[in-house]
Length: 396
Image 1 (spheres, helix red, strand yellow):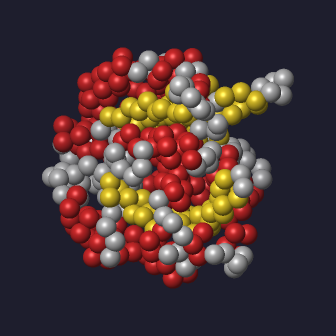
Image 2: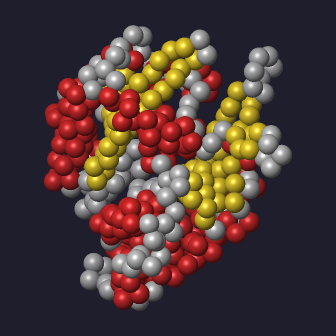
């Protein structure tokens, strides 16, 4: 991959707001059949919770590139449910099959040139047998997958998630990325970072990216707690062990990163992403369907209390009656479906582990002093940005 700063300067990557607009245009984009096939690019990400795919149409104009999202899909395979720190053979098989299905759609239905489709593994994929996954994907698809490191993944996520500007009360536009931090609590790791301006001796300013990453996410921390508490531990014992492990396992690692990178604490705006943040926002604010959902440190505390309490309380939290809360039937149906997806995605142990990570992030990053937003579509951001980078890597 080319030097990131050069690519970011050459191709102005999409913000989350642009991504949301592209999602709305996706149906229209697929219905038009006049596209030059060399304008199509695709990316498939194998992450800790499953496989994500995006495909875009790129047109070169006098002012640069215009981009439309034409395909997005997510298939959950929970590959990080490891045994003896190895990817299980059946999950490897399911992941490879999901990858092949997405690749076939891109090749056969969307007619994307094979050379324009990349397969990458998330930085959160940590196990002792990555070669087994690589081989299974190659056998099913005929393509070689590569793995991104935390730094590259965070850079792509920052550019794809954090809006570049915000509108001030007086109507003027202000730099947003210069005062914002992105934190992503994934299944395999917790990572984040921010963009800083680097003034060159000549020419326009360039950008650097400060990144942070610790190898603890919702699923990987669940695995760690399981080993310490034992598979036979009940929910109360699991929660107790999670609380016991969090200071050394999560907080100390975050604090060490922050000591070397003060911008992580000093910036007033924080964008949160990742599955556990989505679960929290969905359960606390099921009626808020916005792309950027306001959150507070108090929300994190409430979520923590609900998740780590007694099992009956947790079940009530996971099965709310939305009839009185949401009057609009369509919005209520969407919210109920999303809550069902939360229940199908996270076990009670996953929720407890994720809540401990969220509480640690809130405390160490002093989120009670910040303006916090949940970035709803961030799960597509870095793979979409990665896909766009291919535009600079191929010659049509």
